[in-house]
Image 1 (tube, rainbow over the protein chains, first blue to last red):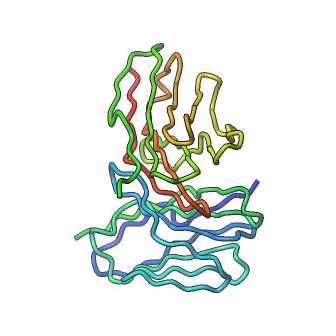
Image 2 (image 1 turned 135 degrees about the horizontal axis):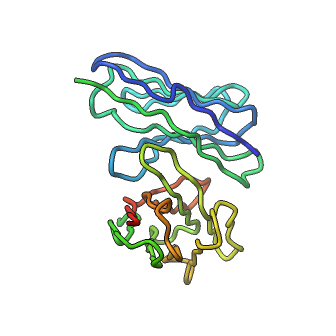
Length: 111
Length: 112
């Protein structure tokens, strides 16, 4: 069974700070997705990474897929209160048959 | 275009009653997923439909839970004889490819 771990579990920072959250596994994934869930809403897909070493940028968010396709990171520059939410990673196995969600990192950005 | 919709948005029911939760996926999406999310927690996978294949029911927590997907579109999640521990937000998602999921707003179920 493939498992995804996310760290930290909780993160509270001040507006303007930078942060990185991590998604790790011992398994190889064919692709990995990041979602953000704001309070009272469903998760929203932010990005999909498919190539080992790939880096994608979405405004102040930078996503990286590990070279071995076992891990990923999300870096936020100059965090804003609107970035507050639950950040979930999800991986699709190497055969494209199964997917799994990580437990999430709950981010709070204080004004 | 329209996103994933779920109804009702809120449901309060008495312990022991049956409830039905509905999900309307994005038109043309072949895959549909149900998740449960307890307060402050991550997503708990319940069931996955892909086209005409047999659904993956491996996440259903007990035989009180069942789901159908009619005509490859609308899905209904049914919980029989509800218990207080069933209280949670039930999320539905659909996807067209690569498990990239588009979620609905959820149904908040409260069992009293």
